[in-house]
Image 1 (cartoon, one colour):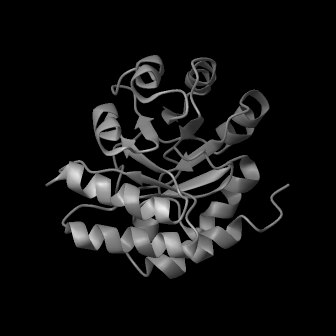
Image 2 (spheres, rainbow, N blue to C red):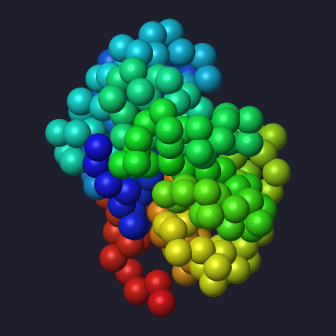
Length: 209
């Protein structure tokens, strides 16, 4: 399994009304553009094992980890590098037992710093906060305050992920506040993904101190 990156663009698949070939083409584009981590997220899968396996193979060609959203068993089946867990997706401890010590396990923490602290204590590899801005992918998600990133930076030693409505124009503010990775779906995959990925990647070359 590949290790968790400490900084960079975290690309999440845009699968709605997309063919398997289209999803693969989008992911290939963002990998060329500099994505450092990819998550397979698919709420209405047609053939999840097939697509997930192809995504693992594609990402590994670029030495980029592929995580599975919500589904530990699918991650195990296709040899993914780990999982991302929400509130109702099982425990970190259970996922660690199933996937092994080297797996990447990320946890959604929304706007809850205590959840992030607990996740760190339970062995998570990263914590994710958000949504920070209006999001078509997560329209019903509770909003998060940018200040939580700054607070988390003082208590969390794990990589901190920001998600939700992120575009190139607002990404720098989140990095300045304490985010280490920017997780993006619609703002990345829906238009010129390779060029857009390059733009996000360039944010991480700026001085965010």
